[in-house]
Amino acid sequence: MSANRPIRIAQITDPHLFADERAELLGLNTRDSFLQVIDALADEAGSLDLVVATGDIAQDASMRAYQAFVDAIARLGVPFRWVPGNHDDRQLMQSLPCSQNAFAGHSVLNGWQVVMLDTSVPGKVHGELAVSELERLQDRLSVAESDPQVRHTLVCMHHNPLPGTAGWMLDIGLHNADDFNRLLDNYGSVRAVVYGHIHQELDLINNGQRYICTPSTCIQFKAGVHDFTLDLLPPAYRLLDLHDDGQVQTTLRRLENYTVNVDQGADGY
Ligand SMILES: [Fe+2]
Image 1 (cartoon, rainbow, N blue to C red):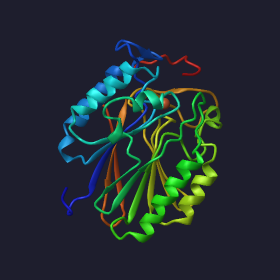
Image 2 (cartoon, rainbow, N blue to C red):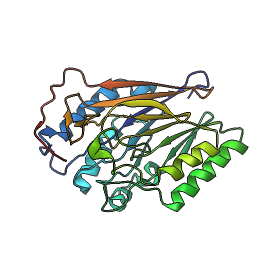
Image 3 (tube, helix red, strand yellow):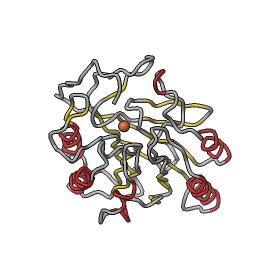
Image 4 (tube, rainbow, N blue to C red):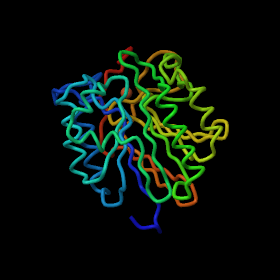
């Protein structure tokens, strides 16, 4: 890693894989769209320092789905980190041989720390940060204030720490977001919070803090509606360039030449 160029991270989120490679989620084959995203990412793997996967790795929380994910990621030859989403089974993910590295709570790269937070609550759609996760975040934010080697923080997690953008989403986000956002307020090093869960593209400043949401590698959810509605946008991934001065530049890449075929009458997932 050169000190002259920014750190480049790829975020993939919400692949919703099944044990059965032919299985579909609301009419879309999630294994196929995920593998197409990995193929696109493979073309630029040489520029990547890290891949982060922000949850809902599997739709059916099956070992075969997790193994398929890990096998595909391994093709990139880039270190990766993951956190569980509401559809995942953390213990099963942890039982994979790669899990010790993949579950590392933070990584330090050229003055930046990337902090991975587990917001999943077993059996629930919404998210919550356990006291232990809040304390771990606080510890890392303290490090950024005292250690000159760590000047900037990127936080990655599954659930949205801001209210959802559609009526049906209002209760499915991070329930103790106030505790989380207060911590970010109290420390100054967090340059962006990156997440998934609501399957859409967002990049906004709220109360002086930057929040970035990335679309799924499969189906997308429409913003600004009351009831569950799918958006007809292609699967995507995100590149994040972390600069030495704390600036975060990001590019969203959607699959080209991908025809979105989904069940438009679906009223939930
Ligand atoms: Fe999801």
